[in-house]
Image: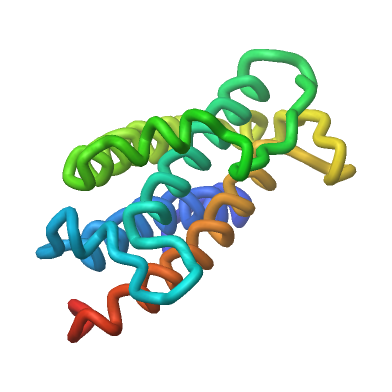
Length: 166
């Protein structure tokens, strides 16, 4: 276990989980071409490419919230509605290989930022209409669990295509 206070350790673990989950996404989409990533292998549900677009867009939104909380005093946080996000539709036009590369590059930058934060930075707050206590720590936890759900969906989409990679 890393040295430091328990809070520092939990913050390090959150940053590590985001880095690790990015590797899971890379591993689970490896070897699949544009057609397979775009296939809706579970009827009526998003394709792996659509999930990738959603994860990258959510990462951008969440990172913007973190940046606002780090640079402003208790900023208002607007709820994100992916169903009405024009940027998502733009991302869908991007080749899957570029989506994965862009997502991973931005994830690396986010993990680096999180690793540089002090304990006080993790407690910086924002005002979210759905959550009475909203700070950087909560946003990063939310991101980890939200993304974990979608990684499970990627596994579900990948399974009908053959063996899920180790």
